Amino acid sequence: MCIVLDPGHGPFTAGKRSPDGRLREYHVNAAIAKFVQQELEGIVTCHFTTNGDRDVPLWERSQFANQLKASLFVSIHANAYGSTWNAVSGIETYIAPRASKKSHLVAKAVQAQLVKKTGRLDRGVKTGNFHVLTRTTMPAILVEVGFMTNRVECELLLSEEYQRKCAKGIAAGIRSVL
Image 1: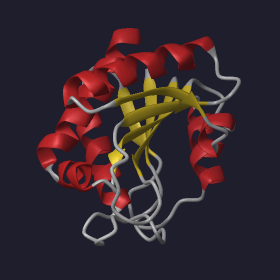
Image 2: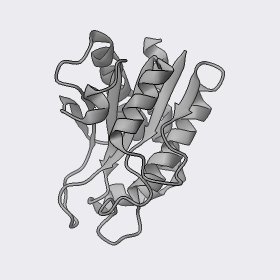
Image 3: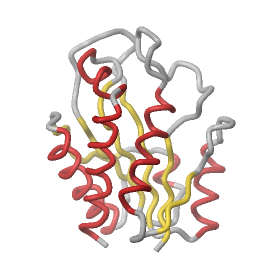
């Protein structure tokens, strides 16, 4: 079984930072993706949409997964509400508006495990018309593992301990539906 892990955005994408600039979203996403790969080692083969040397366009990410004929696409993100510190918090998982039953199943399982492992607010499974969800031909989810515009969650996102908890949640959700 082949899974594509997508550390959302890229290392040079403008604006994908915490209000104080300490957190760069790609670095958190990439760390979590690597930890997910470790959690799933020996169970599935993981491929990454980027190695961090450039900002990979969305079409290239979906095309890569489609050409691999991956079984699952998982895009990992840190959320933001505006560009200043605020109280909005929690974890949410997205699927395409016309997602497959398998996408629904994976999204529910991953969302539940992320909330369980991290103890953060459950914002639920939602639909989003995101390119990586609508242009991939396999079940696909996009997870938002916390808000980088929330001071508490920003600190968590910067910590390896929290990144590993997120990875354990994502991997546990995936394993439960294999």
